[in-house]
Image 1: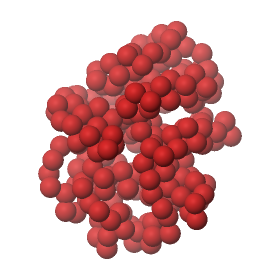
Image 2: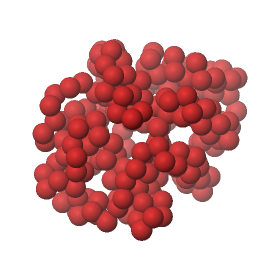
Image 3: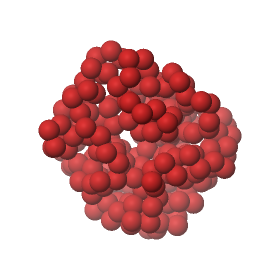
Image 4: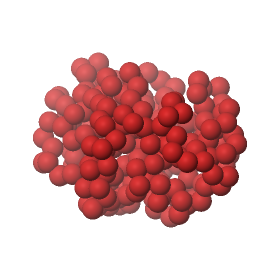
Length: 222
């Protein structure tokens, strides 16, 4: 996290503020230790994104994915609380954030992907879908590859691919429709899946285009 990426600070964060911030290219994250304190509104100069056609699925990940079961929006609270585990390095998700995104989930904006092994939740992610834009907020895993599997499953949904464990990259047959997954900052974990960095100017143009679509919002609200 670079303070040069901080654009504004507020004492509160409401559902309308959060949705407006995503549409403007910002995202919320507390600026105090553990996310406690005032709310920061961030827009990285170099934005981490996953673009159509860029997903990378290694042979080992594809093999791992076959042992998992996948679902969407079946246990949003458990996913966000697992992401909020204070023992995780860099933890920033507070009880206020949990309540805020639970409200967004009930309103049909925030969504979760669950990954289970023998019925037990072992990984997942959550974020906000607006049009053909998905703002990824956080992911977690308790078994190897489970968080990566959650992202691959999400992309398979956006691509209209029926099987996230196809023998080739699940992105290979994508039909070219617009969508954009925002990962905020790029990490080595995400880069291994094809997440890249783009400039803020490029991000703004891609965001504007994605917001005019409806793919992510429609698919995740089915």
